[in-house]
Image: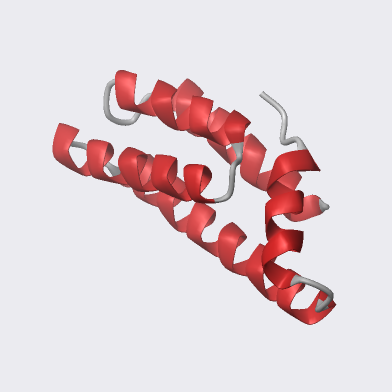
Length: 100
């Protein structure tokens, strides 16, 4: 699942208004939070830690209207802790978002 800039960047732009520095700061904060949750998922070995990280990820995605990320977070919630395919797709989303 690929990162799609549309709704997420529109949400960030709406929050930042005409302030490009604020837009960059919000985008950076989103990327940092996303990276933190992906790392927590990667390291989770029990259901509880996995579920908490996946729920935080889903909340982050919902806050910024990042539909593809919401779908990935839901996949994580339905998967076993440490599911490598889910972690790879989330890392791919993060990598694409960070490359823009």
